[in-house]
Amino acid sequence: MRRLATGSIALALLVGLAVHGQQAGGPPPGAQPPPPAPRWADGRISFSGSPTDVGNWEGPANASIFFEMTNGKEVRPGPSLPTNLSLKDVPFQPWAKELYLQRHASLQADDPHTRCKPSGGPRMFHTPYGIEIVDSPDTNEVFVLAVGAPHSWRVIHTDGRAHPQDFKPSWYGHSVGKWEGDTLVVESTGYNARAWLTREGVPYTDKLKLTERISRPNHNQLRYEAVIDDPGAYTAKWGGGWNLRWSEGNEPFDYLCQENNRDPARMTGPKGE
Amino acid sequence: MPSQTLSRALQAALAAVLLGAVALAAQAHHSFAAQYDSKKPTSVSGVVTRVEWTNPHVYIYVDVTDAKSKKVTNWGFEMGPPHMLQKTGWKRNSLKIGELVDVDGWLARDGSHSANARRVTRKSTGEVLGAASSNSQTLAGNQGTQRPAP
View (tube, helix red, strand yellow):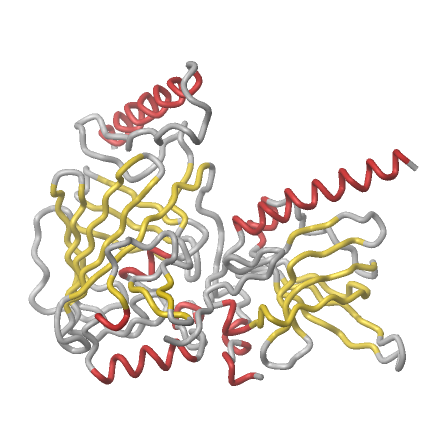
């Protein structure tokens, strides 16, 4: 934990310097580029805040992993990466395309996440109420904490281990990570395929091998990209992603989807009218 | 009266700021569009009968009396989670049982007497409390995560 403490101090100094720079007669706020991403004492990039830089990442609920057409025009939600595919170019197998369109037509009424089910991969990164990425170098783990819905977390092992040969499929799968420069690259497999891959309802199967690339281009932005390799649902690898915004002052809070969740019964979609 | 005008202007300005903050902060763990219809805004006046200050979303219940038939209907309104409402000025006891309120929101798709509250106005004080629980639900009533079929 000493490294974390040292890192926090370094992080605080860096952010403090950035803030000081803003106050020292530079252009007015908003006109200058955001502060650089903070780093730990060893130089590694940090995805988290500090005691003097409280905040976490706001999952953009409107982010989309691919672009759809509306009234003849492609809709490109602001947080989505401009390099995302158009829906027509996503290599769905026919059954997966049909299932996706069905979920879309129902306005996502059957989303397992709404039923307080853990939803890993991209779904976790566009869930509101705050996401924290906690780096624990002493234990060679990175934790992803999501406040929204079932108040859940996942662990990414960074000790160099491989995926186990035989394991029980799970909601979040088994994740191993490594650093490629300033990017955390996470390989996951072993999913039970009972959730949705994204909020829009992108399907997947237990054959999924997911690669996630997480980086922080500057203090205020987290870049999330996913490559989906699922021969059970797609004919080729494909991927996409979005940017998350730093939500200053936001902290995890006691949000428990299970406490009094009345939404599922009322999520009829267009059928209710 | 100038002072009253100023007071109302200040209230309106504060309400606009508050609602703006809610619009930025308020999102939901579910698809707004699957449960509510942003094309069907509603506005009711009535008496608060119950406040459920619980996760994942706060609910308030309001008895609404039909002007002609005098029939009383109990409406349920979904709002944001407790923590988010607290950040925008709500308290667990902000509303008293029996007090009069105006509630603006969007109707549920299932035809029940329920809606997603956009804002609650306390009749006794004129205080306006933003309440939206779903992504992008602003005063203009955007469509949340709903997108037309491709």
